[in-house]
Length: 627
Image (cartoon, rainbow, N blue to C red; front, side, top):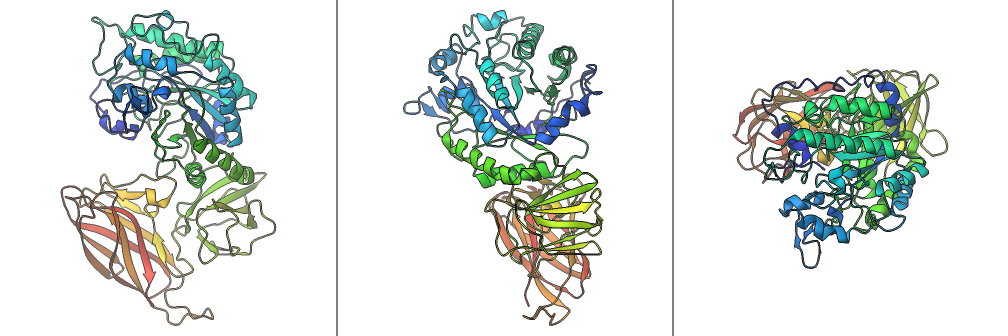
């Protein structure tokens, strides 16, 4: 996958920030580089993709035998701990032909390995797959016909399929045999071709290099992929920079030719710079989830089962089934897809730790797939529980799926802002109705004593018509124990640079950050239904209540400052000090707040002083009753 070469420890997430230049405007930086027919057919071509939600990414090539070690032997080679083990040639500064000579003899795909991939993808509930047909090292899993691929003076040949086999053909046949869609990843940069951009630390390899020679070579590869291997569905290219994008690759010509070959194809946005650029059919966040959705735009998060895309002997930080389900649900609730990567070893075997988790995920999807496939993003800006919402419309009705990552302690869901008539409430896959009450947009659902799923339980709400939500009422609600928890996605942010960052499959992975300017501020709106203490009989002892205010914050050395927190005419001041790092969170009690009456409240946080490194990251704000 993409890693910024000048900054080897920076992931692709940061490329858009670091690769900006003052390059002249590119005439091919447009939705489809001016290639005819793409824009007009987008809705029809992408419908299956929008509904599919879940796909398998397969990173496989000559980096698999190395597995994060060089020379490629885990007992005698040097361990390279960097993520992205597919970059081993770069991490270890290996020249050609040494890289190819040491890895080619170890690349020995077992018979039927692609059948196992396809079966696993099917078992996991995935709907499509994408295989790395050529990564940055320039080696081809398909039997490329280009003269340089068949014979060259740098690597001998780029083709690495065993004699008498073509691994792309085997992959495509296996995947189609399981009824899944077929996609091809292709790196449009190349570390070995003498005329390619960004092929090594020292470019060009040859004097008087002519990039047009490489572009012709690259075009021939891609046209062969979409000519010789049957009907395919996805073009997944990687990667561009502000300096090299669009016309650098003669994108208009290539896309026009590929559409002639296979008009149903969809393409990602990496012919152009910036992972979230608006070009192509969908944009491609890498190993991060956008904090909010993008109405009217399709996106696909590519993520990994451990930390690397390629196979790694030493990377054993595997996601659990719960991690995968929560990640998938988070992305789908924002209108996106998850392309989840597996990295087969030198024999084409997917690590069993990874395979087992994917099979467990498939079992969860068998019971809860209606809440994922074919759904739309959540109509709610905020939810009063740890989880997500997805939605689906059918036959004049809508179905709202509430995914509960944690079972509410008070065994209730209390949701504000819903304007539709409620027809039915139940547990997905369960029997019987759940008791509920809708009063002036405030919905209360009574839940069973225990969660039916240890991974994620789903409450389904059937309503009349398309979802209508009153944004003024769709604010965080006080919980049954009278506590109030305010999360980054629920904040209103004002001022420069400050933003919600790092949102992923659990609330612990999002925060309010980049608070660098004193004119920036944060505000939370929330609803209080019971300010005062409740007796055992359910009666309120007194109207007013006292609450302790906590902030879960992280501050790096050199950061911090002074803030004021206000609610109505009450004000608390806090000196923000280092907690040891931007990820070293510490829950701090700021002071006490009195809430006299029920209703909508607003809590505002403003900076009075900010130290040079920035103010703080905020993971949550809590109001905990003290009486």
